[in-house]
Amino acid sequence: MSEVSFLFDGATASHIVWAGMAAFAGVAAMAVASSSRPEGYREPVETVDWEGFKARIRAENSVRCITEAESGTPFSAVSNGVYGHSYSPSFDNPVPMFYKSSFQCFELHKLTNGEQVILGCVPRDIAAKLEAGEFVTLRLYPEPYDTAVAPVVLNFKHIVRSNNKVSRHEGNYIEFDIKTSA
Image (cartoon, rainbow, N blue to C red; front, side):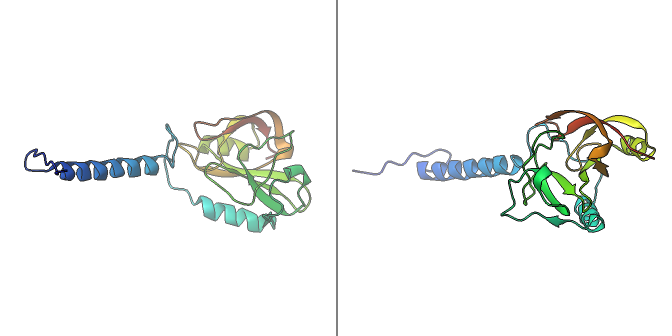
């Protein structure tokens, strides 16, 4: 059997195949890189030290991360003084907690006194209203997203109403009504 070589502008068929494979690999790499953010994801409008904020709040709340063995335990059943992560926090239903955080995952703290809080981000105007003790309907994002760049800690006891629905798109927000005390 003889090898057949096709010429196309001086390139053989094997050159074309190798070039095509390299181009395909490049496209695949770009697809993998862009798949780390879902379609329609909006980067935060400003830089936020989100990791620093969470570390400070953990220290202030004197909480430890749940262990791998405790992962999957409902938030209501974890020990006091513990924090963990959940994709879909809810205020009336059992919410499994996990020790590992992931993209657009909420962080929940069960304080040493048993109170429950959730960390997240809201737009700056909503944060000002919360600080003033106003009644607010808000979307809480699990991390900085688009204009939601003001980190907040919200106590479950201040939540007036929640539809317990988490948006799986547009930042994975949870929407509820809250009235903090000023």
